Image (cartoon, rainbow, N blue to C red; front, top):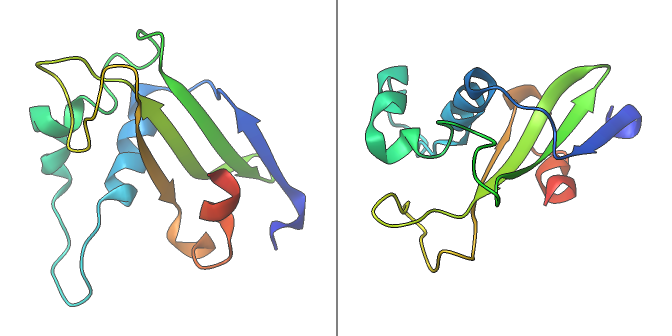
Length: 113
């Protein structure tokens, strides 16, 4: 199924698209209830999509299949006080990765990374 996959570096992303993919990137342990999309409005998560493209370290790689985005990895180097959950240094971007549910467990996440 992934033989027609196209990888696009530095894809042109809207905040809405990043927000959608960030929701898919939220880990929910098996057997737990679904997380409300309202969580994406928390300041601790908004920093991963808000004003995308305004920072020099904003980078992304998208996977498209037949013109539809099916996976995305994106990174942003946060600066205090807006550092995220995996903050190490202002020159080391934190990455997020999301794959549409129908395309998981097929090696797409590995290809994106």
